[in-house]
Image (tube, rainbow, N blue to C red; front, top):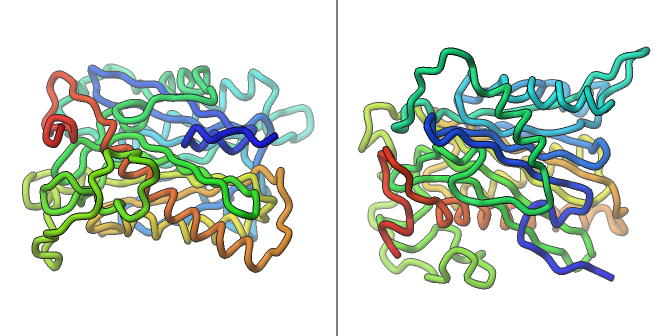
Length: 333
């Protein structure tokens, strides 16, 4: 019997997500882990990425499956979150087997949240501990908004956050998205309550406001560059997952298609100051019955689900002491 959707990336069976946050620092990390290793790909379209172990996800590389994917705040410091995840997975006996050693494969990406009102005067890099804690919290349900990698995220006009969404295609394949939104641009239109992703909304999942009627000057959109001196403090990073049986090259194509969701939900997207990146994960549980048609609709579904997840991230952000930007709820109710 097909289970009803929770509208989370974990609707893809066999995947779990864990969040860990430090509210004083205003940062955190998010881990996607599978019950078993899964095939993965990646595509980067932003001009300022920060990554770990993404080269091995290219279709011509030897290792095709990974044990977990990590999204983290902290800029370059946040790449250490994957070390905590890898240590914990190794202790569980997980990883790529080399002789008598297990080497967990944990690609990761970071966003810049170092200038967001939090106390960054740490004596020791906190991200390794946050990564371990996020893996320990991994479950089928998890919080959206100001949690995990979205804890300290900001957009041009509102707090960003962590978002997720899912859909089941007519082919029976499930697609889910997970995203930490810290964009240079905005997810809402012209300062109003309407989301750029509104045409793709399902069941009022981010307020049901519908589409905007006034788009302002679309040639010069508002960005952090217009409001803040720290414009490089950006980047949206995400994961698109499916139960389809995909190769690593097909995962790479899925990640590429999912970037259309960034462009549909963030204005502008993929700028020189964003490190926009999407991982793709495939558990392989459901075969492709019609490879040409199935991969086409998987790619299109990935883009629409990602757009919805971005809007949900901003919609669910919560206010906290020391915030430098308002939340969607503060501004629009």
